[in-house]
Length: 435
Image 1 (cartoon, rainbow, N blue to C red):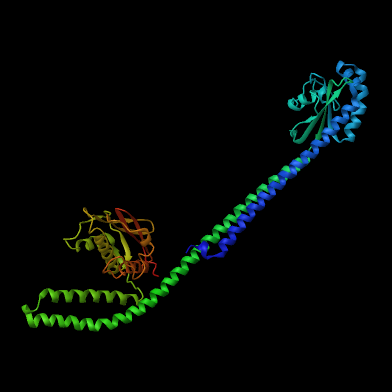
Image 2 (image 1 turned 60 degrees about the horizontal axis):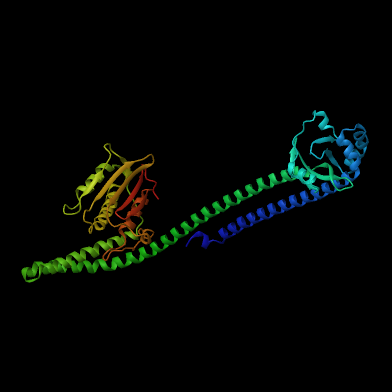
């Protein structure tokens, strides 16, 4: 069972992340709504001020100002400045019917010699067509501003000028700072939540693996005790049966079918070997490490294999690979793995088994590879469990004993399998970290 389903803490971490994300989205939506409402309120205020200023100017003074008559500017200046202060405006602009800027109360237009940053053409065109309009927010010198434009009409309803009012939107600068901090802390919170959830997941995964390993150890210990007791009870009768079979052959000779006696002896020996495996489960795995050249050890093991079996190739380094191991126990590991490989390729037309050895910074790796049909996915997680086997006459202890011996040396054994290529890789550290 996965840690996610077994541990409510992971669900709580996931819910916390989702809640934080939802809070982020809700906060962002609130920020955008506040921004829209603030801009809408500023837009309405500036439009109203633009219409009011257009009424203050009037068509007569507007036409005079467009014609360039000096008295009109002198007469309008106090009125427009008062309107600017009363409306808390940054500037007021006066455009002719051709949308050419004629006057601004701050004097920016006159001081710049007639040049001025281009105004938003769309709102100006709508105002020249008789419709009050406004621009979008824009930024000048680090300040947020917004403008609104209103037409000045004569008695016939014709537009003779356009008044523009510019208001400060400085609170948008504050909003932008809030947005920046909001996004920064939101992202930091999300990253922190993800990091905590990841740590929780890996910690709980480790605890889950530890629990499963402890449970397997307890089961193995109980089964080992039971197996040892059964093995002790079986060994004495087995010895009697074997002795009787040998005496039967020596006493009656050819009158007894020799195949029958051989079958009895073969099966007795097989059961004796099986009971020896069971007895080994009740004992703690002990090793007697000594310097051993794995190149020589692998060669010796391969040379004693039966000649009628599949050919075994070796891939060994030219120089010695000396590791502190128990040679007899590692020899048993190799024999068990090679026996499995021989069975795996028994039905393959072109059987191949390869034993390779390589050194690393941490230790040595021994690989036993075959070109059998591979190990099914559903079997891989159980293949090192005691008493698990897919063979008709298997004990289910071969790979379990391999793992016990390797781990007693402080190493690990791993399975890599796909159709046509299966390998068991044994890692042995330079010096055994005895467990």
